[in-house]
Length: 635
Ligand code: WT7
Image (cartoon, rainbow, N blue to C red; front, side, top):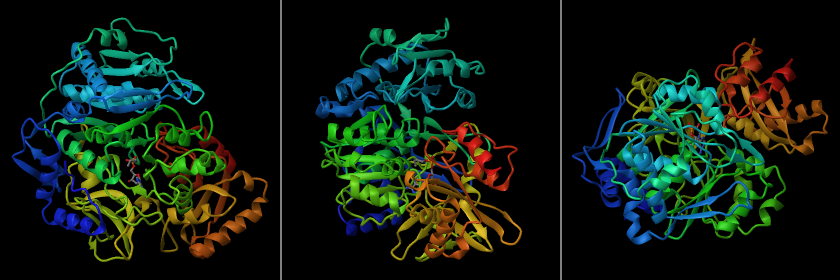
């Protein structure tokens, strides 16, 4: 197998240049050498970036699960595919081999077919982080059903809108799920959600918590008895390269969530290629990504990417703080994890705790540690590097999006020298560009602009389910002919990229463009500050002024607030300049965050403006109660 695996920087540039000069040949070789196809393509890529029409590996025939499972059986049948680490550390971990995974996916696929699911049907999966979640995803892919995984923390109304948007015929859920010391009643959330759904005919229910549930006659069925009856082999559906593989909803900054549509072959090639390169995966490694399979990170880097590479992937049901703040590190020690991939928000929350929680575990098996989801600030980067990576495991700060299907800009471990807060260089095959306000490409280094991608890549989303026009407008219209990411970035003197945050997070104060992320970084360096969020609000003289919402560390809570405000502004002044000083500071106990850890600035902006009338869609918030608290604190 060969993914153009890069061994040193010289080779990186060689591959990179080839990928730009001859993108078709570059991707063709990767597709050719690493997968089993029923039939190969007639053409590598066909695209119209103005109309947002992109096709890869035209007319190829393939099934992604044959590549995730079947082809490994001869050599790796007894190898562990999935390690399941339950929420409760006292419950035994499960080691599921590739042979067992094959049996389980085949049985599940047969159950789905028996229950009337056919190629092209949409299946909503609403499950906690248990092996059945991965099995259900793969079983859909096996028979060509389109999975739409909805994160099992979403509310009933969020589930309703997602089911209705894609017209799901079936829901796969469980009685409940464990999360720390809580139990979440998933089945009753589905019952509520389905009161307003017309298309769902069957609900398959996994038993996990033993909670009492109501089963609706004719609609709801316990899964296990069906599996017990099912055959452990199954003929995979032959899929066209561009047949839909899944829909995954991502919240737009306004309006209803967007059902990003990913298709079969391009996604397969891209998730496998990026996984192998970015995590430098080798045969006996144990890889752990702490995301939920309900997000793209879990799709690409818990399920598909690792299994396509015949890897061992950990599925963790729990949370970082249960039963205590040492859980992540205990799990790494226990399963001898070699690659660990998590989010800055998790790193920051653990960095607030005593580092002895980390240091008491043996993390010496780690080779590569990763970060994803938002810019990682300097302080968190160093904490991660010092205490987790022990300065020997490179941090891969991976930039990408639900829409990109896989990682786009990231250091390659042991190849790209890392630089705190920088996602560094594009992967071979990825062509980022920075654009200015006049829609011109900015050449050269030491520049900032809007981040676009100017050539298609196999993993990119092909559409928004049911709304291709919105797809075109959102991503291909701002800079015609290019894919617009919505992020701003800078390119430093050597060509490294640093994502500065969403372009809409830039505030213009007295005519100066100020990215909120670097100001937050500066504030977060103040010893009393745990976390902060900056937004702009209208100002008579400056046009906009800055409003800071700041969470204090425990050690800062006893301090005089007025003095602290002064100190924080002096700190900003000396780090960025007096222009970036905050006009208003409000100390808060939390920030409104989406479940993937992103601050919902839209809400903070409204509060800062004093407009409490309409906060828009808040169904994706993890902590809706904080909004009230912040509002009251402002009054
Ligand atoms: C947005 C995409 C990619 C999977 C998880 C989030 C931000 C993501 C980084 C990073 C700075 C990052 C961007 C991007 N983002 N990774 N390493 N450094 N920012 O997926 O919910 O689709 O969010 O997350 O702003 O556009 P998503």
